Length: 242
Image (cartoon, rainbow, N blue to C red; front, side, top):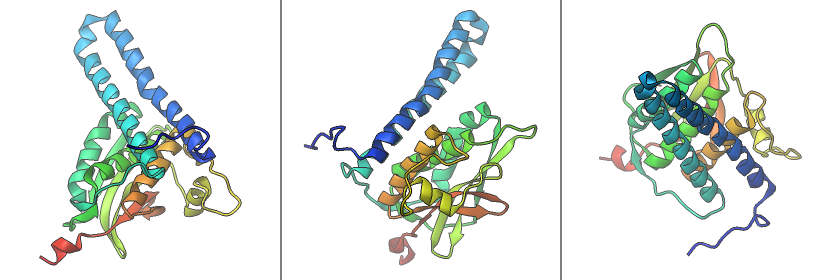
């Protein structure tokens, strides 16, 4: 049986994370309430509204599951079993899941794959959760403009492995900024990234914990003219030897 963790035993950074999570959950739940209100006003919008309610409710539940997973990994209550996983199939599932979120923010999603890629050693559910959390944060961070912002989910070969991450033009981030935000630089405290709300930053920290559990660190990087956050996953050597 897992031991209970009291609030006194939690470090200040995870207490801050939990507060940010609460803020994150307000958005989809508020949308659910608004769409239910619209449903009461007009029977003609029932089908479309119910679809939106169902989508937002599912997104809220998946966000909660993702935060719980990231938190349990961070405090050592859970571990991830790694196995060969196709990154290509995972990123298309992630993009499909976030399509409705992108439409709400008037953001255009782009999926880019670098040809045939070998499976990586990862946890399929964990990888999907991390990319959904990261993608949601990136979409929410886009600056409204006349032209829709383009957010790219890309996977490609890199010198150290398979690079998988999210990129955009209007929410640039540097490696130093990421380290400062996550408390990795001496004398710094964890603070929200300047282009992200506290809730969006929480999604980044959760993704970072999940990638870390899969032996893949999250780092800032570039994809063509866009900047973003990505993790380097190691190809499955078992399948490479077959």
